[in-house]
Amino acid sequence: MSKVDERIVAAKAIRAVLDDGRSCADVLDERSGGFVQALVYGVLRHRTGLCNAIDPWLKKPFKPKDHTLYYLLLIAAFQVATDPTRRAKVVNETVEAIKQLKANWASGIANAILRKIDIEQVLTHPSHPGWLQRALKRDWPEHHAAILAENNHQAPMWLRVNATRFSALDDYLAKLDAANIAYRLPLHQPGWAVALVSAMSVNEIPGFTAGEVSVQDLSAQWASALLSPAKEARVLDACAAPGGKSSALIEQCPSIALTAVDVDATRVDRMREGFSRLNHSVTSKVADLQSAKIGSFDAILADVPCSATGVIRRHPDIKWNRYASDIRQLVELQQSIVDNLWQQLVSGGQLLYTTCSVLQSENEAQVLAFLDRHSDAVLQPLNQPWAQTRPAGIQVFPSDGDGFYYALIRKR
Image (tube, rainbow, N blue to C red; front, side):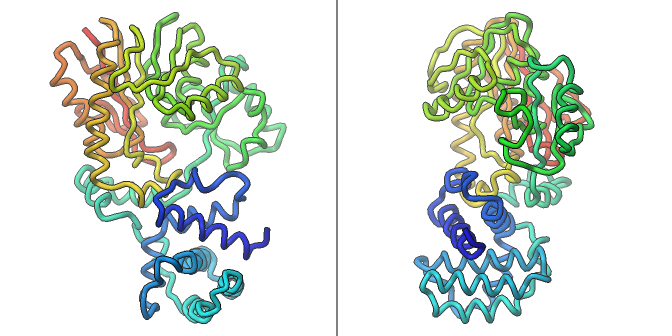
């Protein structure tokens, strides 16, 4: 596929996200190629700044039926912003793409605009919807600017080494050394984490297909260490798909009896494929944990559905396809799930509540309300040097790892 064709593919993918509300995961796959993904992610990350650069030069907005052409302009503006020396080449390829779409009327507009736009402020603009900027400023007045800026960067590629396949992390690191793959270790190690300096396809990662390693963010890898179930404990991973935390639990606590549950049958099937690749023995079920009774458990990991505002770096479509009204609905859903799970936790057992959100209504406010409803719930301390201690639980902001929240609750 030529660079011109890839531009068209990227513009159509952006249209699917912004006009149709689809996710990047739904419209992109490995066949799309790294160039296409870079263009799509770049435009979604910097959308507002790009629009501010393009729109003042338009006599009138593009009609919805012509949005693919508009997104070609945003793609070009993003490329010029990241490498101004390529402006002429970018303009020529964009004009050619417009002609391929049989929209010759727009080629002159593109040529004129792209040669004179000011791209100075494009990459520094916060580029988040207003409701989310206000929510972050309200919740984190001292941190919101850093969160907004970090959300527009590419996230590191973290791996979780399968502890059942190696006697020490160094054994796997030797494989990376042998393959001349640069890596780094975290300042605070959750167990078996290593980051690749440059992202690559999973098929290129030594040992991936053999189940020796998985891709999992650093913040997510802390779940098994924080829950720390006892040997032979009955453990439930609620809302478990895609299965990364279940796999980490079974790798680091191999004697536990683990049940992984999710409401989405398709995602459960993919989760089972992951367990098979890693050779893990996990009982998996499809169930709606707002009401389903799965059994009695000594430990429960409640990784509840959330706004995913802590993983915007990895999923920039979240910024534009999430709304303030969604948060209220998610808070109600989280409450019904965790209340139901509490009934299935034995006395003396522990529930680890976690989200990949940075919004307090889904995190500490949710946990404090839970403690008010349940007199047999006791909040456990989780002071960690890599997280901010809150009135309930700990909050991680996107940085080396994704934005995450954890709270550990024991049942009397």
